[in-house]
Image (cartoon, rainbow, N blue to C red; front, side, top):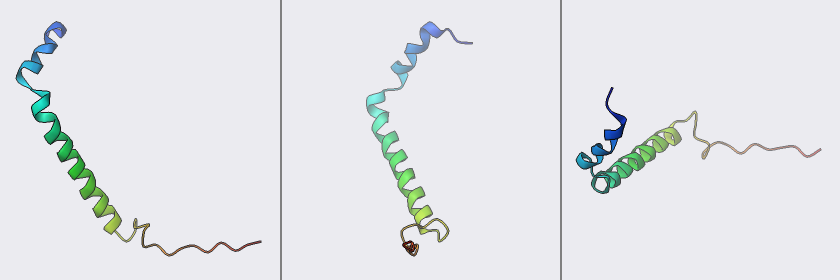
Length: 57
């Protein structure tokens, strides 16, 4: 195992200011694609589902 006191050195190699924005954009794009795929599926498309009529008692 690595020495836990040296964990901070990873930030000398990985610059969060440089990579964080592209990571967020990639995650957002993935979320949008998954949502579009699910809404496009007839089984899970709640937007085009017929409205249920509830009978008044």
